Amino acid sequence: MSFYMRRAVFFGSVWGLGDFFAQFYGAHKEAAVRRARGEKREGPRPSGAQMLAMLDKERLAQNFVFGLMAGPAIAQYEKLLPRIFGLLTRSATPCLCALGLQQIAVTPLILWSYFNAMTAVRGGLSDPSFMNAHDAGAYQRNDVASVEQHIVKRVMPYSLLTSWGVYTPLYIFAYIGPFRGATFLSGCLFVPWCGLLSYTQDCELL
Figure (tube, one colour):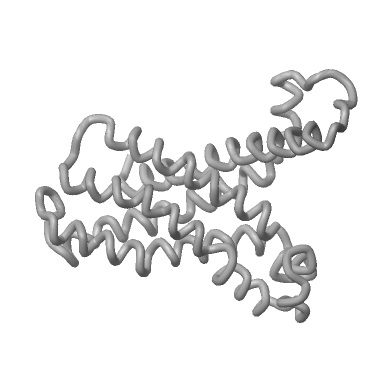
């Protein structure tokens, strides 16, 4: 399997798993809110199979496909890094410069692409009226520009802040050099973050 294909599968998997956990977190949080309000459960507690059946499979597929499509582009960027900054292994300055570029340009582009892609496939760009649910006073126009403003000013900042917890360890791994288990550890960093992005998309957009 080529490097690009491996990265496509990796990012498709972490985005899909992230959404899977985000959906379960959202369902459990909603149930906790109902319990806090004193609402009684209607019927018995759902079984594991019933909970899986309630999973939004279309949303899961959308996240998987986004990761699958973003993977080769991210892989190409990873290939370019040594050409831009030189060898990262045991080289602190190139690693710091690469991390800076990642967080100033690349991660914001990934976030902007993700939130726009998910909003578009769910009809939010063709019908921006969903913005009424977020801040009607600031977004009365209900057009694409208001959606973009909401994404850039309200949705992306926290996601970008939390991304430091993903990419800082990744560039520490790059400084250390290749080691067994690096892909697994990278997955352990990406899955919670991708879950956060999916949950944010669901709560703040569509």
